[in-house]
Image 1 (tube, rainbow, N blue to C red):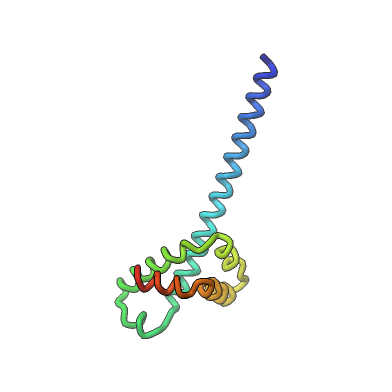
Image 2 (cartoon, one colour):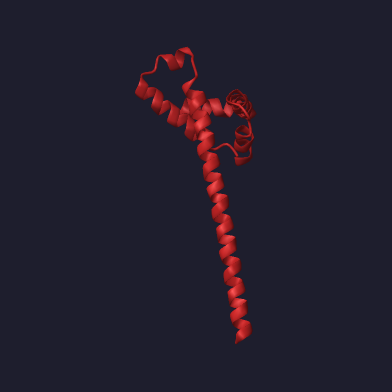
Length: 114
């Protein structure tokens, strides 16, 4: 009976530890996603061209949200790469590099959905 209790306690402890590690990993991914979205939002807000300059404020907010949704599909490893930039300009250039990974698909997705 005592062996069963120890085994049950060990299994419970292992499951609790695994669950807490998964929760920590999820929290880390969620915070990475928020930080990445902030970088995308900043890049889109600072974008200046004829297309964007003709938008009203509400159209620009809607377009910004749409672009963020598209960039949300970037693989987590590439998001980490962008976040590893030490300065704002470094992160922006890394974001541009990630955009160029599949530039045609990104442009088509933005044109189609936004």
